[in-house]
Length: 319
Image 1: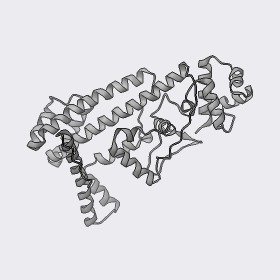
Image 2 (image 1 turned 120 degrees about the vertical axis):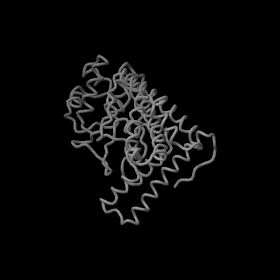
Image 3 (image 1 turned 30 degrees about the horizontal axis):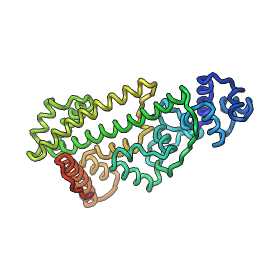
């Protein structure tokens, strides 16, 4: 992490508390020159002890000094270069804050994504052992703002997960209901209405209810209502986050594992098979097997939603 990033945040919170550099130095048992060097980025490192002393003196969480909590969805920089995992996406500030606190927003909100993160961990990508930094402090105005932003970012992450789950469930039923070419066109319309939270009562939703199997009509109607509610909750979470001064950006180079999983699951079976052919992944027999595997996963997801919305307690075996 760029050291001047920590220094800039130390200076920002020091000024918010109304401290001079000398007063902050006195509070952490150091010298004014050390504080000035930290703030200016001339110090090569900040020890854990210094971090905790600064956190207590400035009344902000340690994570607010380590990371820019006002932009929690931005990529995290380490050293002079942005660290990118071998799967092609960065760690985000909110992921690193949760990592430091021993939390897992994604895993708490969605069991499927918990499994996905464990797969990434085994592959050596972005999940690391938990590390907690704890400091006892009575948070001041700056600290309370930082904590509020972290809390709002977690709420926004959960709202995004719930929205994406509703969207994904509807799309897997649409794939079964409509022929492939029609589904390409309809899914784009479906996506727009899901994003806007205006799916219920629309022409597209009526057409989908007509196209699905008779015994799935009740399930899909419930999913449509859930999708509109999830979109409304997501809009509210975004508005609350921005109201607190947060900067909401989910850039491609700062993806979370949730985004990566959704990208992989949103592709049609045919498109995935075509990609495998072009990449030389397997011969025709291998591609056929790959198609069957993807189709089986989609069917498992439909069965899971049927069981959930029909009130069944039966577990659906994975493909």
